[in-house]
Image (cartoon, rainbow, N blue to C red; front, side, top):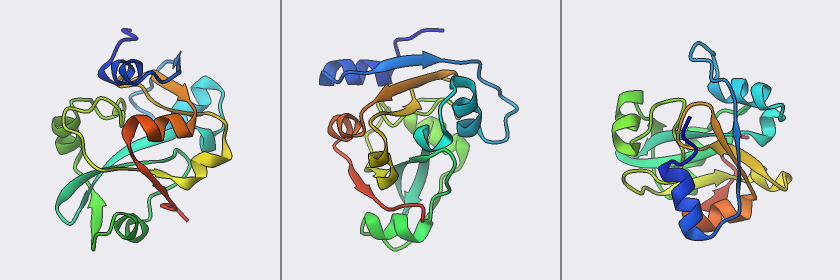
Length: 157
């Protein structure tokens, strides 16, 4: 497994400190984020999943804890839109350049508005996908926000 991905390169270019954690990705897992949390021995609330959605027909990237679900009304309100829904997996792969199960908010093919759930502040460090299946990045939430230039909001409650 390569530990150099567009996501890790983006963090390196931004001068952000991070650590990598690898695990055995289970393609048959019902919920990829929960499987990743279990495999790396971290609480699911600390392992964040990257989801691609559409807000008023335009792509957005949403980062939420792996044990939570996105509230689409809150997502739309947080980004000043009217209606949001999840993007089809094939479209998410085409847009980001990553495979489902390995989508990172960092280093995507085409930058899109990105938002991080506020539950991230409950942790000194969080985990998120490193750009390939079986690779997690561990970093501080504030560093992730700085690297992405993203906002934070309540997206799941």
